[in-house]
Image (tube, rainbow, N blue to C red; front, side, top):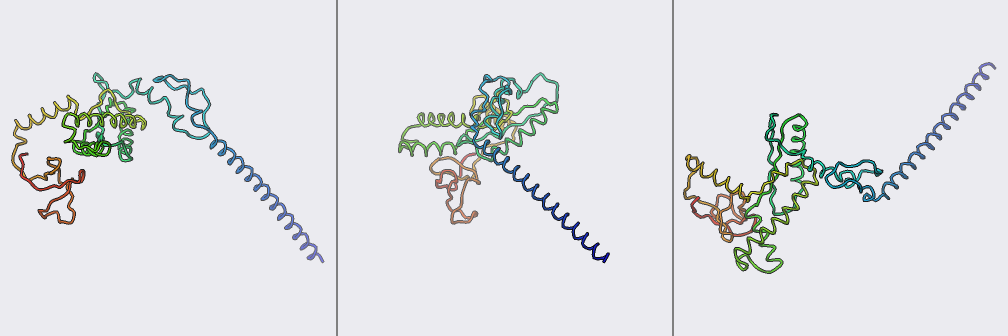
Length: 287
């Protein structure tokens, strides 16, 4: 009899524990459901936001950004990054000091070609170099990161020729040398401006007071000076050499720019220029 009563008590306790556990689980589900609803509501509100409403309307160009206005519920690059770069640049934070006694540290940005706007590869290089230069700047070094662009010679000539043909059905021979050079400079100014704007939008901490272009007068004089010195010291010489001659562009191209379609590289067959698709043939020229 006593055994039976004890068994009933155990069963009653077990049922009470199960009931309490069920009530606890139901309460947890209700709480989680409420949290999920709140999260969905916040996300819906954030999605409904217009990022333009949170762009700082107060800070004048070149001044330190004022942070008194309301912030958006989700990250908006156009709102968060607005005004900072112009203040950094105007304040001269990126400029090197030639009279400074601190250890110098210099990087030259690999000059992007003016053939086209920047792509993800340029962004990767800029991000890595910017990380290094900012770290050295914070470490106290007198840092200099030199910006610039490359004229890209043949590549730029080809894209401008294609543009002329597409828009006017004319070749560079039709327009003449002076007019064609003028068109090339127009292309450089257009895409050069685009590239500089892209680098600023990336936040690259470049010293813009030292901006270079490979066809600048100073750079051209430096190249000539270097070649003359090397020649006078006997480190370079002029001779006849077998080169890859582009029959249309009428210039020599590098081995890497020559494609061998349907032929082996060691055959003396005609190749194709990878940039212009012109016929390339081996020819002895003074170099």
